[in-house]
Image (cartoon, rainbow, N blue to C red; front, side, top):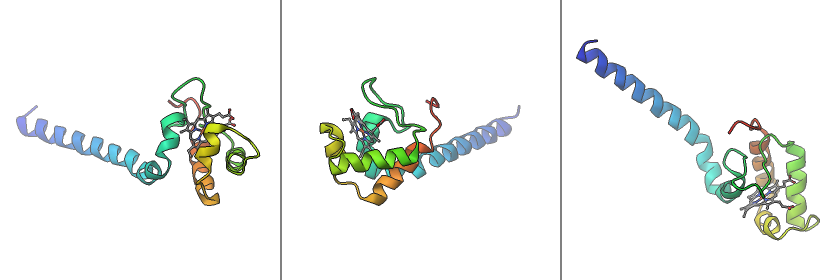
Length: 108
Ligand code: HEC
């Protein structure tokens, strides 16, 4: 392979991997700002970082909405999640529920 070909090959490879990185980062940038704290326990991919935390990937969206409202409103009392859900609006809850529900379970 000529030097020029090798260089352009590398350049295309770099562009592709940069595009792939952007594609992964972009949808999460806004979510990270808002829900980064959730990801610190439940994982950005919905797979919990510790075995004592629940995995949320692929969980039913309606269940996630319901249980987050219960944590927030105190009808499902839990010290950690009560505090976590407290500042969430109904639309925040819909957004994060949709996010976790859309992840394929086991796709770690
Ligand atoms: C410090 C770790 C931690 C953080 C941060 C955290 N969670 Fe949790 N989460 C837990 C634990 C532990 C449970 C299990 C609570 C229980 O026993 O009911 C839980 C439960 C849940 C459940 C219910 C799962 C089920 O199967 O019933 C949902 C939904 C949830 N968390 C979403 C969130 C969201 C959204 C955020 C961010 C706003 C968040 N969590 C932040 C640790 C955490």
